[in-house]
Image (cartoon, rainbow, N blue to C red; front, side):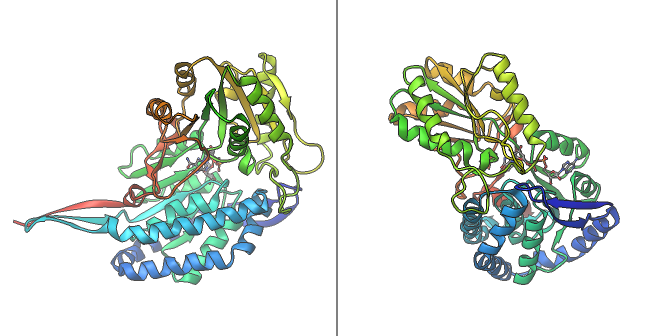
Length: 451
Ligand code: NAD
C-alpha cells in the first residue's frame, strides 16, 4: 500500500512519511498472533500483570517526551497532552488492580463451575482525539486477560501508536502479542478481512456503521465507542458564573474534540440571558494558539477538513436565525485554527443542535421547563452523556433517570471515571469499556458440567 504523510496541524509542516501496512503484512501479523496467543493465555496472571505494570511505569517516566509527540501530531495543547498521559497511568492502575477478580472462576458446586477465557486475537481500530485514553481502554484489559491485539491507531495519531508499541515491547509484551498496523481507514478495512475473534472500535458513527456492516455475517464480538451530541441543562437555581465556567470548560477542552464534549446547552429561561453573557465572557478569555505553549487552552483542529464542517454548521445556524455571540470563522494564518464560537437562539432545525460538531463551537438554547429540557436533550440519534446543573439533588436525580445516555452527570460534565462503565445509547455505540464490565468484555464464559 502507499505512504502515509504525517503533518503538524499547527503549521501544516510534514513531520514524517511512513509506509502503510500491506494486506499481506496484516495477514502475517494475524497468523503470528494466532499462534502465540495460545501460549500468552496460559502465561501466569502475575507475569502479565508485571509486564503491564512495567509499561505503566515507562509511560509515566517518558510522559514529557510522549506529550510532545502527541501535541506535534494532533495539535493538543501541551498541558492537556500531559494530563491525558497522567490520566492514562491512573486508568491502567485501575485495570491492574481489578482484572484478577474479574477473571476468577466461580464454583457453584462440585459439578458446576464457571471459568473465563480470552476471546483470542482481537482487532483494535482507534481514534486520534485521546489516543492514550481510548487505546488503553482496549489494549490494556485485552492483554491482561490473555488476548493478542492487532492495533491500528488513527492515521492522525500514528507516532503515538509507535510509542505505545515501543513501550509495550520494552516492558516485555512479546512482539507477536501486540502488533501495530499503520495506515488510513483502508488498513482498518483490510484488518476486518482477517479471521479475528473480536473487534473493538473507537471512532465516528459513520465509520462504526460501515465496520458493523462489514462484520455482520461474522459471529464475533464487535464493540463500538462512537460519537455524541452531549447536552447540558442549566436550571434557574444555580450560581450562574460558576456554572458558565464549568460548562465552557466541558465544551472547549481539547478544542471541543472529545467524544463527551458538551455539544448542546439548554438554559432555563429565567437565567438564559445572564448565562449567555457569563459564558461568552469566559470563552473570550480562552487563549488560542501555539499548542506547545503551556498556557494555550485552545489549539488547532487535528483534521483540516473539520473547518468546513464547522463553517457549514455556523452558516446553517445563522441562516435559520441564530445569533453569533463570538467567533464564527477560522483563525487567519497558518494551521487548522477555528475561533471558539458561541451561537445563541438556536433550535433543533439547525445542524449545530443535531450533528456532532467535534470542534470549538456550541449552540445555546432557552427552555421553559424541566420537561422541555428532557424532550430537547433526548431529541438526538446519539446518547453518550447528559448533564444537569442544579442545587437540588432530588430534581437532578429525577431528571437523570429520564436522560437517554450511557453516562449522566450532576453538577459536572465531560468526565470519565475508570470505576464506572463507559457506554453509549443509540448511535453512540454498543458495549462498554472501563469498570469491571469493560474488563469482562474481553472474556467469554465457559461452563463446566462435571457429571
Ligand atoms: P473515524 O471514524 O474517522 O476513524 C476512526 C478509525 O477508523 C481510524 O483509525 C480510521 O483510520 C479507521 N477507519 C476509517 N474508515 C474505516 C473503515 N472503512 N474500516 C475500518 N476502519 C476504518 O473517527 P476519528 O475522527 O478518528 O475519531 C473521532 C470520532 O470518534 C468522533 O465521532 C468521536 O466522538 C468518536 N470518539 C468516541 C469515543 C467514545 O468513547 N465513545 C472516544 C473517542 C472518540
